[in-house]
Length: 339
Image (cartoon, rainbow, N blue to C red; front, side, top):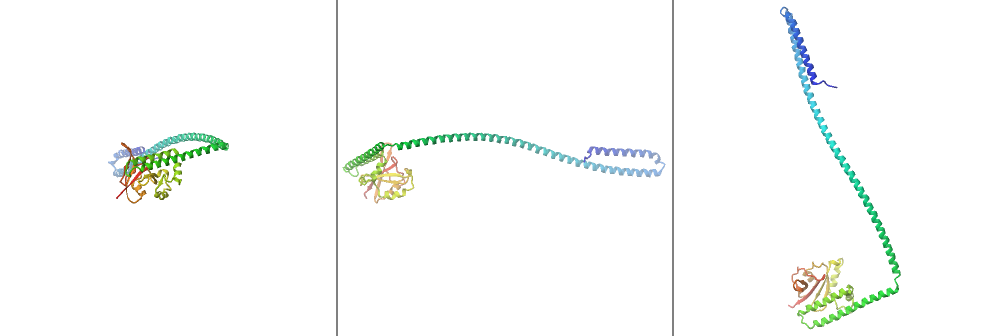
């Protein structure tokens, strides 16, 4: 339903009032001439005027109602305009969100294409690696076949030559052991010519130790194993009695988690060898005293490097002090103090 505009309604009311006023003036002019002569005309005029006033009052009431309706319609119009503006703003926001979504979709599409390209490149690399691996497998199979053929073609002459080389190496090792034994006997006889507190014992100890190290370097680690297991040459390296008890605690330790300790005493020429289940640099004098559990009072000297004098015997008395090392080992001299 289409409502009439406020202006048209106001214009219609004004026209009605104007027509009513003209009709009233016409009637008043037509009756003026007879009003002076006819009392009935006067009463008629009065009643007519009263009705005209009543009609004017009604028209004014209608006019106020029309104005109120106009205000109501104007408020409704403003509310609808505000709603329309809000809807337009929401529509603009939706359009911006649509643009952002479209851009994000395009970005994701580009990333998807790039990821597919990288995936294809990785697939090609994997295929190349598989081909290279297959080629290496074939080479390994060929080398394995060549090795098996060589092992089958290993003649008895080559075996005899190999056995001869092994026997020669064993003979050299035995010769090294005999020479070391003779040198130690010579050192022992030479040591007997010095007193117990003579400083030349240090030179003899160093010489004997260097000989043992040279033998170990030349003949290999198997020499020490054979020497320690041989009953005829068991006097070359004597192990402390606690070494057997401590060795049971070494199970579970790796090679870099224990340290060899070589120490000399006044009562024997051959050093003692034992093991402490700690790294070199973490062993204190208290740990060494725990290992060297003999009754009595002792002084402890350890081989150390000095910037001015070179290798020296460093005396250590503090139980918390870290012991110096030499060539991955700890070398000590234990001197008993007579009380």
